[in-house]
Figure 1 (tube, helix red, strand yellow):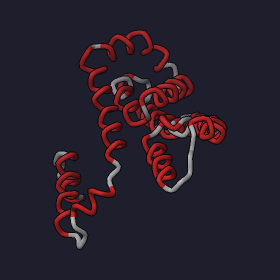
Figure 2: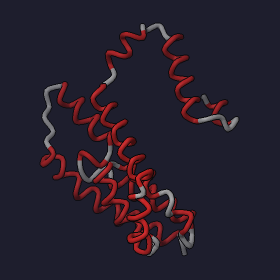
Figure 3: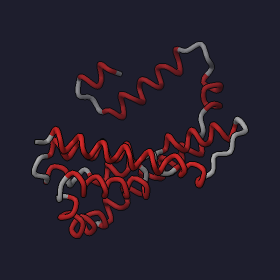
Length: 177
């Protein structure tokens, strides 16, 4: 897979090829591996990308960026806040996909990419829906008899997210000067 990544091959084919190779070369039978896959989360995550692609192809993204673009280009704080909100509406990875067209238009795209990465990653901790990783953990806990409710998650998610976003914003402001 690394060889395919380095050779500028399609990333999706490299990942699919490596996963297929592992399925056939492992001592575990593929059926046993597939039994461990949480298909509901996989379908949910796939659905997020379908929604994201629909927003892009429908023209809704261009419409929203036309009105929010100026705010998004306002600097580290405004991009961080926008990224944090969007990350908790559509999850952090689809949020990056939706905001990627705005980053090259920023005064400093390098800081823009760092801001987007920082804010969407940290904002993913805010709610269970902020990151698919949170849902995976909640589902795994549920299978082990531990119920993690949305409200219970917020008790830790809100302060952790706010604190980490503040530190991230301060750090990015520090390194950008």
